[in-house]
Image 1: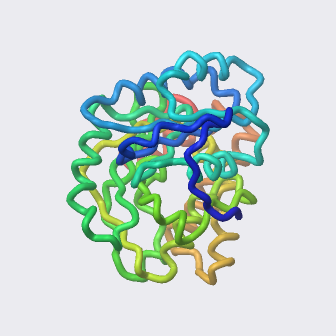
Image 2 (image 1 turned 135 degrees about the vertical axis):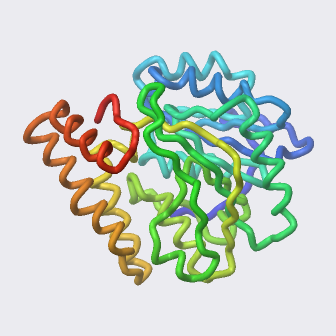
Length: 301
C-alpha cells in the first residue's frame, strides 16, 4: 500500500485551481468502459444544486473510453489514462489528489439515483459533520437489471459497537461516503485485492473502534447487476478475498447468513452456470427469488 501525499497538480504538470475546495470528490476508475461510461457521466454532471469535483483514472483503455473522457474533459478536475494494477490502484491515484472533505467511488456502469442525489446526501452529511468520529455515511443503492430493481442495499442499520465487524455489510460501497481524512490516517487501498479491496480498507479503518458509520435516508445510486462485484464468477472470487481479509485481521466470518451466501448461493450459481449455462441459472435464480418474495432477474451474468 502507498502512503498518501496530497498534491494539487494535473497530470500534465500544470497547477489545479486552488480556490475553495469542494465538499465532495467523485472518483471513477475506468477500463474499456465505453458502453456505459457516457450514461454514467451524464448522471454525474446532471447533479443539481451541489458543488463537486470529478476525477477519473483510466487503466489504458483500447475501446472508445478515451474519446468519451475527452468529450467531458472541460468538466473534469483530473483524468489520466495509463496502465495500472487494477481498480484499487486507480482509486489510490485519485484519492491522493482529491480535494473534497468527503469522497465517493462510482463505477463506470453506475448512475446516481436522481438529479438531486448528491445534494440530498450532502445535506444529510452536514448533520453528522461536527462529529469527527463519523468517518462514513451510507445511503441506499439499488441493484438493477435493466430497468428492474432486484435488490436495495443500505436500508438496514449497522451496530456502532465492535459487533458490527462480525456482521455482513448492510450497505453497498457505491453508496458509502468516506471522510477523506480516513485515507491519511489509515493508508490507501491494498491493490493486491481485485474485488474486495474496499472491504479490506473499511474493515482496517474500523478495527480500533473509534470510527463511526452513520446511515441516511437518501437514494444515492443505481448499480448494474453483473458488474465487477455482482456477477456469479465475481462473487465467488470476492467472497474468497473477504475471507482473506477477515483472516488477516483475526475476524471470523459472520454466520449463518454469510456462510450460506458463500457456500450455497455464490458457488452454486457459479458452478450451475458453468455446467448448465446462463439460461438455466436464470430460471433457478428466479425460482429461488420467487420463494423469497423478491423481484425476478432479467439476466444473470
